Length: 295
Length: 335
Image 1 (cartoon, rainbow over the protein chains, first blue to last red):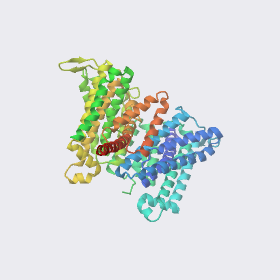
Image 2 (image 1 turned 180 degrees about the vertical axis):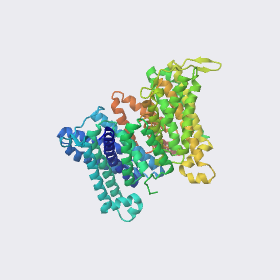
Image 3 (image 1 turned 90 degrees about the vertical axis):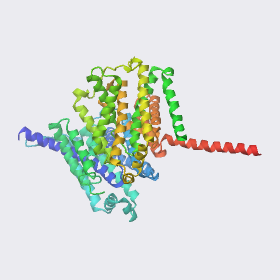
Image 4 (image 1 turned 90 degrees about the horizontal axis):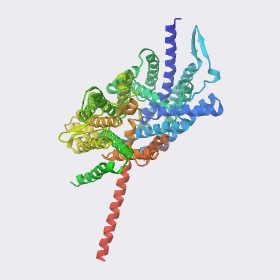
C-alpha cells in the first residue's frame, strides 16, 4: 500500500480511539444532563482525576489492570458523594428559576477544586504512564503498523458500550433510567424511587468517565490540563448530539474523533473554529441538538 | 428618597477610601487596589447579565479581551491617539462584538446561553491564537506607549506616573460603575428585571424582549470592555492567556456568587474577598485557588445568597436589638 493510504488509515484509527474515549465521557455527561437537568461542568474533571488516581495505583502496585478496576470505583464514590451531599442539598433550597445558575456554579466550583487539588497533590509536570506489557508493541498487517494499546482502547470501549446498552435497554433498572430521562416527575409518580435512580445515573456517568480516564492515561499522558480539551469536546458532543441522547452522543463522538484526527492533518488551527461555529449554529437553530427529541 | 440616601451611604465612603488610598498606602498596595477595582467593574458588568437579566455567561472574558485588544491596537497602530479615545475604542469594540453576536444570543437562556457564550469565547481564543502575528498569541503585545491624559484648561497629565494613572483609572472605573448602577434604576432597568422573571408577560405588555435583551448585552459588554481596556493599560501588556484563559470567565462569576446574587454591590464585595484571599495566601500561591474554590462551594451550599445575606441577617438582628433597647427605655420612663 502507498504511504497516503497508510496515513489515512492510521489517522482514521487514531480518530476512532479518541472518539471512543470521548463517547465514554460524553455519554455520562449527556445522561446526567438529560435526566437531572444538571450540566455537570466538573464531569471532565472526573476523567482527569481518574487518570491521576490510576497513575497513583500503578505507582503503588505496579499493575495497570488493578488501576483500571480501582480508580473508576474511587471516582464513582466521589461522584455519588457530590450528588448526595451537594446537588441534593441545593435542590432543597427551592430556588426556582435561579436553581440552574447555582447548580452550574457548584459544578464550576468542583471543577476548579479538582484541578487545583490535582496540581497540589501531583504537581504540574506531566506524568507518564507506561503501556502494560501485555498490550505493548505494534500490530503489523500488510506493511502497516499500529500500536496495540489504541486497539485495546477501541475494544474496551466497545465492550463497555455493549454493557451500557444491555443495562439501559434490557433491564428493569434501565427502563426506570430511560423513563426518568423522558419525564422524571411522572416516573416518580408511578412509584419509582427517582432520587435513587438519580444517584445511580450520576454514579454510572462518573464511572464511565473514570474508566475513560484510566484508559486514556498511557495514550495522552497525565497532566492538569487534561480535563480542558475533554470538557470542550464533550460540550460539543452534548450540544450537537442532543441533550440526553445516547445515539446522538455516539455519532457525534465518532465524527469529532475523526475530525480531530484529520483536522490536524489538513486544517491545522481551523478545526476548533469550525467545530464551535457549528455548535453555535446548532444551539441557535436547533437547541435540542441533531438527535434530540425531548422538549 | 430614603432608598436613594441608602445608596449614597454605600457610595460616599467607597469614593472617599479610594481617593485617599494613594496617600495612605504604598506603591504595592495601590496596584492591588487598582487591580481589584478593575476586576470589580468586570464582575459588576457580568452581574448585570447574571442578576438583572438572569443570564449566566461562561464567556464574558471575550468582551474583556475585546476591550483590551481594542485599546492596545489603537495605541499600536494609530499615531498619537489620546488616552480617552483609546479607552473608548476598546469599549466600542466590545460593544460591537456584543451587538454582532446578539442576534444569536438573545434567543437563548439558561444552559443554552451559557454554552453559546462559552463557544463564542473559544472561537475568539482560537482566532487570537491563529493570527498570533498580529495579536502576539501567547507572548502577547507589551511595551506599547501610554499617552498622557489631556484635559482642556489643565494641560497634559503624565500617565506613566503611578499615582496619576491610579486617579485617572479609578475615575474611569468609578464613573462606569455609577452609570451601570443608574442603569439598573431607570425604567428600562425595571423592564430588564421583569424580563428575567417573566419574559412572556413583558412581551405581552408590548415591550420587545429580544431588543431589550440585546441592549442589556451591549451595555454589559461595553463596561466589560472598559474594564479590559484599563487592565491592558495598567499591565502595559495584553496576552491571550491573561484575558481569555480558562479561568478568566470563571473568576468574575465566582466573585459574583461570593458577593451575592441579586444585588448591585455584591460583586464588589466578592472581588474584595477574592483579592484578600489571594493576598492572605500569597505565601502559598499554589493553594490560593483551592481555598477560593472551597469558599465558593461552601457559600453555594450554606449561604446561597452570598455574603450580602450575611449583612442583611446582621442588619435584621441589629434592628431587633434597637427596638428592644428602645422599648426598654420607654418602659423605664413610664415606670
